[in-house]
Image (cartoon, rainbow, N blue to C red; front, side, top):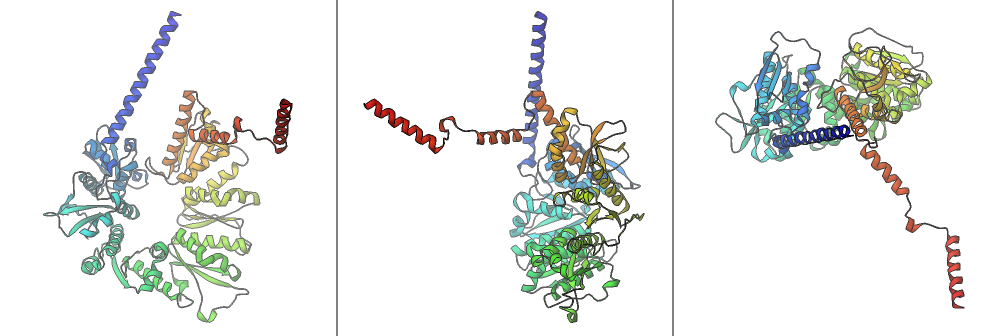
Length: 634
């Protein structure tokens, strides 16, 4: 008994030490977070500072580290010693600032918290740019960044912003600048140049490639013009010819067009949707500054943008027909039966507009004036789709799927399975049985969208035919995903080894956590798939052991919300939650689930003081009370 008592005392002492150690570690983490200047709206007026983030993200490599690319001849490694406060600024909220610097510089960046060292990998130019960007972000902590002549490595645009528009351009806590940075993959902050600041203007530094810088610059100028009308006219001689001929084709430039009031609203569209559509389909930078439209890009891109906007305006006056469309490389034409035109177009063009938004294309029915009204009782009309090849194919298959639903067999009659060995962009076909189609489609097409997103291919079902478009690797991956999906209906799937794949992450889950991670009928897996754009399921290896495999062409990172790394993080959180609950000996359900269950029981429980009784019972009770009172009076 004495030995047992001493053992119990030792156990209690060790547990109390563990608790105090964990309390100290938590207090240290709280102190480190409170020291992070980014938590206080860091980043100043520049977008680069981001916000404070967890230091565990610093161990995650930049996404570019996972990219498949040949290393340049001058590939090397540079290191920078930084302070604890600088580390918070470099990391940013969820590691986003670090990832942004890596993306803009096209380098690999890793932050080591213990050594307070920033490691940069890449070519000499990539390392130089990444170091420059990191120093600029850190300098925002103490005040405006000073820009010198050696800052420009053909990656810098300096834009004068009127003092009265600086706050509008920056946005609350730098949110507007950060939005532009994310849209155009740039790094932006206000700076001092030369002798110091100008009282009337502040200089905005924009870092990135020529297209990204131009897109961000015009976006800022559009905002400035709403605050200071007429500002573009003052600086147009500087803005219009900027970076002329500085793209790989040597044809980079800017064209302009002036709109009337009614034309501007039509060319802009609802919430800027028409402008974005023109920009994505033409692959030029399209921006409206006041009543002036600017088209920046290589010569073919600018030409396409102006043609598309001209056809857009011509539709206001009547039918449009594109002469010589057969010889164009930027369009696809689909014959749509007359009785399906309304279905494909949708109410007030809603269906066509949704397809344009999804695939980044421009679409309209074309016909000559003499053909107007023909074929309403039969025949077809030509739907023309403009845009990049991938977007055109996606929109075309979407239209074919809609037509096939209204007019079965129109596109699929006599079609057979097709597999091509083309390494570039092409389309394969698979034929489904009835039960296979519904299973592969899922509720409201959720399964199809999941496989499409994880494979990185275009997957569309036209009747009972699955069209799979993409390069050879994407098509092969998508067909594998489909085969595994259909195999799950018959039982467990065996995938012997995934170590040689670059699109898979496997996680071995403890037996007591498997049901918790998968959820009721796989509900938790489906939720994580939707959140991260992945495809995941339990599969057997060559020894018959079960593990979870996460598939996606997008590797993701510890700070990202999409990709395999994001899904892996969610899975590990569920495992830790289950292990913690089991260790405490409590109900293993999550707090939210326990709360929901208790709330529902509470709602069903009746109060003992207010038991409901039928009217007849109540009347009977009142009669008995009256009888007893009358007897007592007698």
